[in-house]
Amino acid sequence: MGGRTVQRRELAPSLFRKKLTQEVQRKLQKALDFPAQRGELLRQLFTDVALEVDARAQERLYGSPQAADGVENCGFMTANGTFPRVCFYEVFAQHYAQVPEDGKEILPLFLQLWSQSFVSQIFALLFHRWWIRQLFEIPRQESEGSLRYSTAFVEGASNIFWIDLQSNVRRFYSMFNYTFEEVVLDNGRLSSFPIQARQDLLLLLSRYMLYYEPADRLRYYLKNFPKTGNVVLEPADMFVTELTDQLQKVKVEPVLLHYLTNMKALKGVELRATTSTRLKTALYSFTAPGGPMYPTRPVRHAAWETLDVLFPVGRHSRHLISLFFRLLHPYYWPVSAWNFTITTIKAMYAKIMKMVFGFFGFILMIFEKIAGIRHVVHD
Image 1 (cartoon, rainbow, N blue to C red):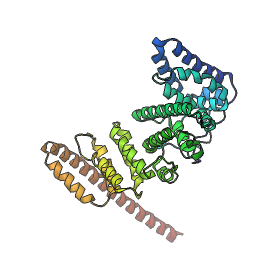
Image 2 (image 1 turned 60 degrees about the vertical axis):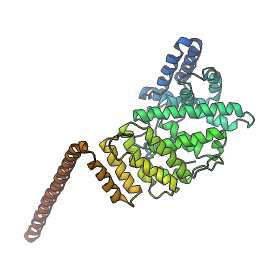
Image 3 (image 1 turned 30 degrees about the vertical axis):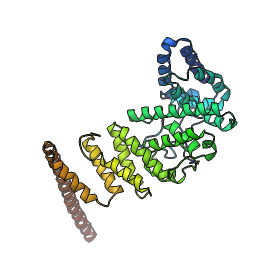
Image 4 (image 1 turned 180 degrees about the vertical axis):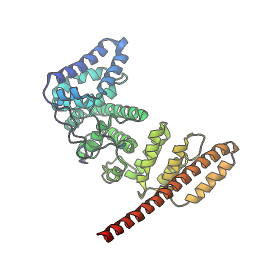
């Protein structure tokens, strides 16, 4: 295992916790009994379990208003430099892991609502701890049920992580972290997944690894990538293939900038020639204005920086070719000239201010030395 799993305190026995689990069961039962309201009820349940737990509720659930004690103290941070906040889905996941009987009690309700919207997401959030442990104990002959639950888990996790990405938040980081550290990096638990679900899970985490985890974790991930018979590509090639596909889908500028910046961690990673070309092409598609990607100016600059870091050979020729094609489109000239002028003025201003402050610092240092000499002579 990776040894970097988000750890929460054990849930304290409380009537409040019991009421929460009963409320989940009540809403699932109500969604089953009232088909006309089913979609809205399930949407509300998903929203409820994704909410953050306030200090008062944490005290009632954990016996302390700081449920994440130990996380900040060990420097545990997500990819965007924030500490993971505890949400209700974590509380339920912990509860069902501590009290498996409650999970078995509501599992039939999920089976009856399987085809409805938000069901796979709710299932993944509530059961990502208990069910994975349970899956490890399922006999091999019960492969049909195992495949059903595994497929639902991967589908739900995929939708959940996409919601996070589209909102540029990391509310579901705890679930990603647990799946990454306690499942993917644990060959025993990963091997309990059916082959197809196992492959889908590896591809899914490859797409979101740089979004949720710091870039310096990439080497560790590739080094400890599980060896499975159905993975044809090398870990690095599979990771880059999924990553380039993900880049084409992301339309949120801050998220795209985050991906492009963190992709510099791929420097020095050995790739096949086809994978390397694929990566270079994906980055190059973000360096020019207009279709098909229509990148903003910050995205274009980030793509150029990452491209130059990962592929330093031919850097100058690439920029010359890009400039040549820009000259073929006169309608870009005014904007380019304006941005060039502003950038130059800002750079000159920063340089002048640095020189001024350096000069005054030098003068101040001379005065301090003169004052020190006079003080010594006077003594």
